[in-house]
Image (cartoon, rainbow over all chains, first blue to last red; front, top):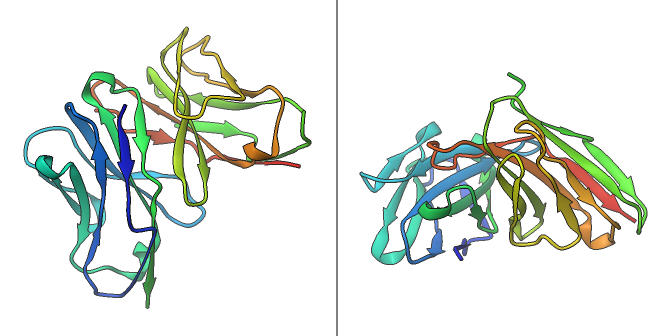
Length: 114
Length: 113
């Protein structure tokens, strides 16, 4: 069964700082990978996804993530954060062979100081 | 399209009571799932369904039942509520070919006293 680890529970940054949130997954086969964001008081929405091809994936709002298969990682990056990026970020994985079942990580809370 | 809708938004139960959380989607999505969100634990999959009449257990299925009689609806039943089931519950849907991009409902905040 697949699993996801997000090691950063709470990250605090100043505006304009660069962001990298770690995500590692455990599964031996082909996977689909996702980053979701939950803004305060809102439900989850998709930031970006990887299913094949270029391992560098670009999403909405200037976010990107890189799939490194050898490291089982899918880290989320943004070169310059804004106060409006304050939210909780979730990494998720689904096995290609069982695409209806998606497993989420425990989330990383991002706080941006204005 | 309304997307994924959930009712109620808030609910308070006493230990031992039963209730059903409703979830409906109007996007004709085959896949539907239920998650619970708890602080520090992210979202955990309770049950999921790949189509009408087909359901399967997720990571934390104990204490919950589901059924899928139609493509649109996927209710979650708490048979005998316990304080450990205090959580925020999210329903989500997706479709084959979307590589399982989930569309989430607004959530139900449940408190069990």
